Image (cartoon, rainbow, N blue to C red):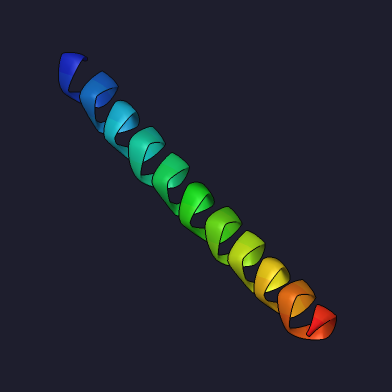
Length: 39
């Protein structure tokens, strides 16, 4: 049972990291686009 909890925690951490990377990538692209348009 303890192993299952650890695996769930690991999946949660990986999922959170992926979401953060996707959000950062999206924010960077949007910022870059806005910056390029304002030039």
